Structures are given as C-alpha cells and as structure tokens.
Image 1 (cartoon, rainbow, N blue to C red):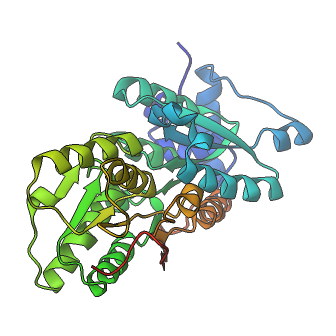
Image 2 (image 1 turned 180 degrees about the horizontal axis):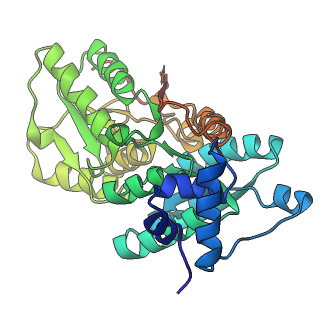
Length: 344
C-alpha cells in the first residue's frame, strides 16, 4: 500500500497540513522540520513526483468538484446556472496558466471520500473549488487540515473556517417578495427544491421573513417543496396537482429558481390560465431561457460569472499565501422586472 501524507504525519508527529506543505514546497517551514519530514518520507518509500520547470507549469490544475446529479443535464456545462460560473472560472484560469480539472462526485459518501482524498494527495492539483456541493463535515476538515487550498461556491462551511462565495439570497428573496406585495399580491406561493440546499433555504427564509414583516399569513398549503434541485418538470407536476386539489390558490408564485418558474408558467398555461393575467410568476437566477419565454420572466439576477472569477481570485490568494484568514464573500443580486408579474 502506498505511503500517504497521513502516514508520514503519524510517524513524525507533525500535522498533515505541515507535511503537505513540505511535500508540496509551500509555506515557511523551518529547515529542521523540513528535513525530518523529508527523511521520514524517503524512509517510508513515499513516491515523490518530479517535474522540471516547464512540466510543472503545465501541471497546475484547479479541481472543480460538483455533484453528478448535474450529469442528467449534460454535466456542469449543461446546467444554465453552473455553466456561467464555470465560464468565470475558466476565464481566470487561462490568464494565470492553470488548467481546469472537472471532477464529478456521486453523493455516495464512501466513494466521494476516496475520490477527494486522491485529489488531496495529488501534487498536480494546486487547489480545489466545490460548486454547490453538500460535503460532510469530517471530510471538509480533512481537506482543510491537509493544507489544500479550497473555496466553496453557492454553499458555506463558515463554522469550519472554509472560504466561501455566496449570493445575497435572503436580500434577493426579500426584493422579489416586496415587488409582488407592491403589485397587490397577498397570497404568494413558494415553489422550491430540497431545503438542505443552502441557497434554497436562504431564499425560503427571505420569503417567510417578508410575509411576517408585512403581517401576511403564512399558509403551508402555498409552500411546495419538490424532490429535485433544478426541476422544471418537478415544478410542473407540483402546480398541476395543486390546481386539481386546492380550492384556494395564490395569486402569485415565487419559484426558488428560474428552471422551476418556467415549469410553473408552463403548467398554468397548459391548464388554460394566463400569466400574468390570472397569476403572476417570478423566479431567481436570471438564466438565459427566462429572457426569451413568453411571458419573459421576472427574476432576481445572480452575477454567475463574477462568482466564478471571485472564487478563483480567492483561491489564487490562498495558493500563494496559505496563512490567509478565512473569508466569506457575499455577492449582491439585482431585481429584474419583466412581463410575468403584474398587479392583481
């Protein structure tokens, strides 16, 4: 069995993070510590990867990790939200002589841990970016302790001191809710995916808080939590069922993302209703499709490429200065008024 960084750490008494920095020639380490770790690594048969300067430049990969649930939509580049984030990553990477390595994980904890640990041990990977991935706390701490620079996009592990790039989801949700209320809507439905998704949970919080701030009743029957994260089809089914079973209906629907909002509009139109004549519908994200459907979609604009660029800028700082303090960067959002919402 190959010798790992953990094996060397156990033998020398130094942390995995310190061992990683010595092996990868990063950070300020005393000569005594460096010699002790390198001697132990040699004695234990650790396999060093040797590169000349030119080869080393070509081996600077940034690993981008996402859940393979996106594979159903053609992978990360087939998802209208994450494709724009990936474009922002790529634009920065090209300018700084890195290469983008896209890794899909399964959601099966044991298998994911193996995949991610292999990446941690790789000397070809300069840093890791997790996009919207719910990772278990133990594994995220192992990544942190290994010394591998890591940034999380569209999720956060603030208590674990992991750098994260987030949208101002709560503020965006409040802006949309206030817009609908200003149009005269008092009964507003919320159409979401699973609330273990950080962004969805924050948008739900904005929805609830705004209703309370306006002393409007929170009606559970108007809140529908779907079974998938991005589903136009899921939202279509939810609304179709709601139209058949509920006697009282909202006058407006706020969907947790644009993909769901499109499903809501389609279900209402197929049932013979007009949008916005009979119901108003709003989304969140501002994907390209929402601009071209009929009616065009009122939404909250997320600056997706900026998220990718900001994540890479932060990762680049961590690669060059491992002792940087942890930062949570929240990117503002913007209300976009189009034709899918109107007064009652």
